[in-house]
Image (cartoon, rainbow, N blue to C red):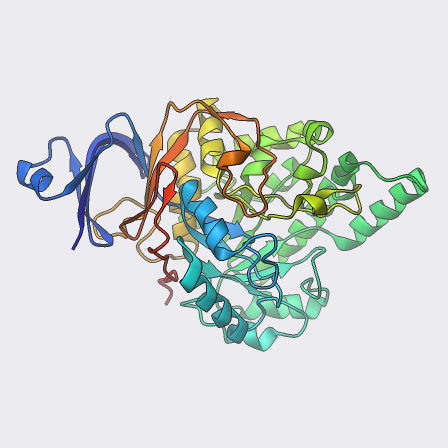
Length: 449
C-alpha cells in the first residue's frame, strides 16, 4: 500500500486554517497531524514538502457539460477531466444534454461505462427529465444518480419539460434531489421578437443577450419552481442563479437546515454586462451574464449564506460555434480548469473568505448530494486533495489550457493561485503540469436512505 505524507502545509478545512500534515494510505486519509509528525511516519512515507502551500479538499463541481457521448468534437471525458484535475476538481456531476440525451437508466449506465474508462476525476450524472420519462424518474437508482435535471426554460431537443402536470408529478414523486434550470420561455420569446423588430435585418448585438434572457424571465421561473417545491416538500436545488432579484427567494440558514438551495457559477461572479464589449460571444451563456449590480449582489450572497454552492457550468464549444450574433452564436464556455483559482482570487479581493470558498465548492456539494466520504479533509475519507501555490502570479495562457476546444474567456487574466498537485482517491493524478492517465476516477457513491 502506498503511503504519502503531505508535510507542513496550511490546511483549509471546515472553517479553519492551520499548519499541519496529512498521511495518505492507499486511497484514504489515515492521519491528520497538527504540529510535529513522528519520525517513524516520515521515514516510512513518500514525503511531499508543502511548506508555504495550501491543502484543500478536492473541489466537487456539481454542474458540468463534458459533452460525451455524441459531442466529442467539443470535449470528452479524458480531456475535460484533465482540465478538471489541473484546476483542483476531483469529482464532477455531468448534465444530461448529450447525444443521446441521458434520460433513461440504460443510457445513464452506458455513459458511466465510458467515463470509467476515461475520466481521471470521480463522477456521477444527472438523469434528464422530459415530458414522457416519468417512470424512469420514479424508479431511478438513487444510490448511483446524483439528481434529476429539469429544464424549466429553453433547452436543446426535447429536454425542456413544458407539460406542467409532468413537472408537478416530478416534484411530487422524485426520490432524489431535483435540480432546475429556470428561465421563462414565453418571456424570452417575446423579448426576441421585440429586438428582431427593433433591429430589422441587422444582427442583434451580443450585449442584448442579457436583455433577452433578463432578470424577470429568471425570477418568474425560479418563483414557480420554489412554489412547487414548497407545495410537495421537494428537495430542490436551483442551478446557476444570476440575478439580485432571485436572491430574495432564498434563506441564509445553514445548508443542513434547507430543502431549497441555490447555486451560482464562477462566471457570474467574475464577469458582468460590461465584458460583452471586450469578449463578445465568448461569455454568452444561459442564463445570461447580467449587470454589475447582480454580480455584486451574488458575491455578497455567498458571504451571507444565501447561495449554497458554486460550480463552473463548464460548457465547451468550438470557437467557430461562438461566431455570429446574439441569436446565432451558441451559449456556453469552458471554465473548470480555472474556477477554483478564480474563486480564491475573489476571496483575496475581500468578497468572502477562503474558508467559504472551500465550503461552497467542497463541503456543501458533498452535504447537498449526500456524497459518501468526500468533500472534507477527515480521517477515513477518500484522499481527494489539492495543493495550491498561493503566491503564483501568472497569466492564463492558451498553451496551458487543457480544454479540448482550446480556448477560454479568461485568457490574459492574471491570477495569484495555482493548482500544483491534485490527488484523486490517493493517486497523484496531476503534478505540476503532468498527468497520470493510468489512474482513473470512480463512480461516486451516495449515502441515501
